[in-house]
Image 1 (cartoon, one colour):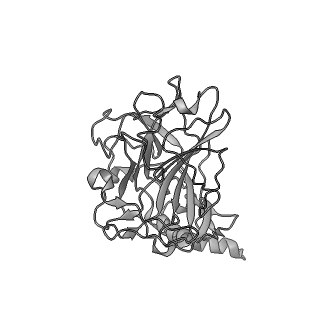
Image 2: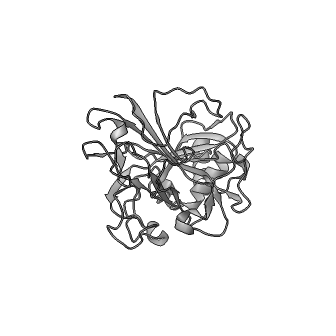
Image 3: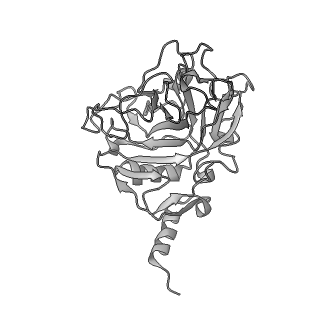
Length: 327
C-alpha cells in the first residue's frame, strides 16, 4: 500500500517531537508558518479560564484562601498547594495541545462597576522573541521556572512597557517595529467608548540569571532587556547579571465595553484599591512552566529562532497543537 508523502512526513514529525501525548494533541497543520519581515519570531496559544480561587501557590504557598481573587487559565489543578511536581500531574487542561501545556497562568479577577466579575474570553498567551534581543539567542525556559510580572503592591501607575492598556479604536503615529503593536498604551484602565474593545497586556521579563528558578518574590531571577531602537530589531541585550534570553511571555486580553460591564474606567482588579480611577494600578500575573519540554524546544527551534510567524498553535514544522474549543 502506498503512503501519501505528507502523511509519512507528519508521522515522522510526531516521532521527532517524541512526547507520548503527541499522537492525539499534535495534529497536521493545513497552513504554513510565515516569515516575519521585522526579524522577530512569534508563537501564540489559547488557554481558557479553568477556575477562580483566592489562592496563589507562588506568593501564598499552602495558604488556601489567603490571596485576593485570581482567575486561573489552562491547568485546572492549580491551587495554593501546587508545585512543579503536582503541576505536571494534570490529566487534562484547557489549553491548545491539552496536556502538552500544563503551565500555570493566573491574574487578579476583573470586576465591573456593579461588582460583577468580567470574564476573560478566549485569551491569548504569547511566546515571542520580541524586538529587543536577537531572535537567534532565544533558548527554551528551564524546567521549573516560575515568574511574576507586575507589582500587586504598586502605589503609582506601573511602567506601560510591562502593564499595558489601550482602547482598540485608538490610533498612534509613533514609530515602532510592528504597526499592529502601537505605542499608545497607558498604565491605568482607560475610558473606552461603549462597544469599543479594551486591550490588556501583561509582559513578563525574558532575561534569566541562569541559576535560580524563583528567587526574590519570583522576580529577582529575571530582568527585562535593554530596548532596541526601531527599526533595528535585536539591537537590545540582556544584562550581564541575567544573560540568558528565553521567549518573552505576555498575557493578552480583549474585552468588549458594554452596558452590562459599565464604563471601563470604573473597572477594577481584585488587587486594586477601592478608589475609582485607579483600575489596573496593581495588575500583575503569575506563570509556572508546565510545557512539555520537547514541544517548547520545537517552538523555539522552528518558530522563534528562525523569526517565523507561527500564529496560533503552529509548530513551524508542518504540525500544530490541537486547538482547544473556544468559548
